Image (cartoon, rainbow, N blue to C red; front, side, top):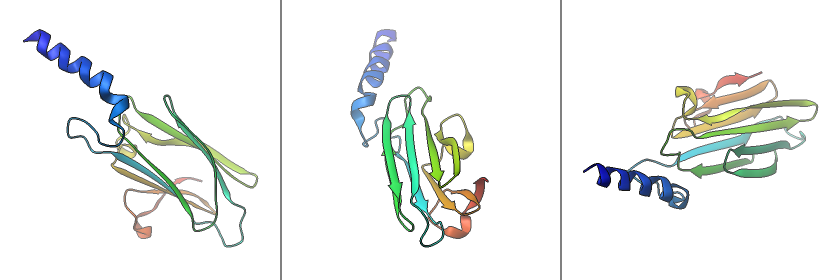
Length: 134
């Protein structure tokens, strides 16, 4: 019995990177969605996001546009994504998904950049946004 459990565990760890967005063991894919709600005619929001395994690259997000990605969290519960945001002279770097943080391990994390800071919600309802970073 122990050998079967060990074989299943090894298979889960090995297959994790190949599961893409069809997560194994009935786990749901996670989504991070970043939207630019800065004032009209603003410079684009610049963004660089990464985890320990994936570098998602640099992106320019124009006002009213968004950037998003999906992923399957690690079977070991160690998944962490962070982003570095730039808007003119302002910048901030913070975690956008952290399995160890109950606020940041939802199935959907929506971050909205506004002129007074970055807001977070776990749905697409703008009234749900709470200030996350000033």
